[in-house]
Amino acid sequence: ENDMAVISFWGNSEKETGQTIATMAISTMMAFEHNYKILTISTGFKDRTMDESFWPANRATGLQRILGTQSENFVNMESGIEGLGRVVESNRLRKGLIPNYAKVVFTNRLDVLVSPRTENPKEYIEIAKAYPSIIETAANDYNMVFVDIDKRLPTEIQRAILTKSDVIIITAKQGQQGIKKLNELTKKNEMFQGDNILKLIGKYDASSKYNVKNISRELRERKLILSVPYNTIFFETTMEGKVPDYFLKFRGLTVVDKNDSNMFFLSELKRDCEIILEKIREVELKR
Image 1 (cartoon, rainbow, N blue to C red):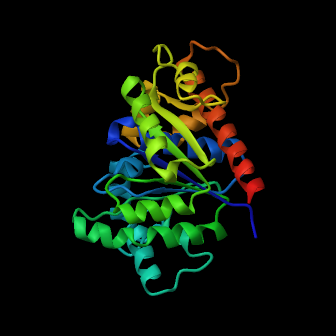
Image 2 (tube, one colour):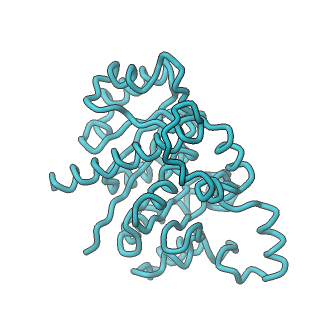
């Protein structure tokens, strides 16, 4: 039985919390900083953000023509979540299979299961039924599974994923509205009242009066909440399919210069990873 944890990102408002970017940034940092094998799962509908952040679109199509669709990194309909969905349906899902359907970002460190290709809502819902089993089985092949839970997933599937999650990270927008929503959510919904909940501000601006310290105080959090700062350079790399390059280029930054936006971005991601690891240990001890 290996050490394994499922960390799910969930937001109660639409896209603008920067949830997908937060999931990518934190899981990539975790893969770099710690010796873990990680699977990051995108569950989006008509959402290629993750795909396009890790792999440049034009390069993929060029290589696809040369290689046919045989290269492991290129998803034809038999691979990816579609292929895995069929494996789940026919009850053949077992240890060792999931990595064959995921795309490799860093060998033995970070794999990504990109979101379904379909543009048809009915097909999407069918495919989505496979997520809970996939997440459970992934425990055999990975140390950590990060899940970006899309709001358009059927509620019962969202619930099933949250139930299987060791840590749930609620993503919110910075500002009065975001704080209000977080407060309401934790009061109303028993899913978010457990001690495995963390809160995160995406697209974070440290110069706002709604900074992490003030928000944490207002939410009566004992410890500082997580943040993924808005970083122009990182944001641009997500548009160019160069997220891996960003980390390879900047991860060596150790000198702390609070005014360097890349340094601040990476130091917050490191802090997020530490808090998540601490939370995983806390949750394990209570089992």
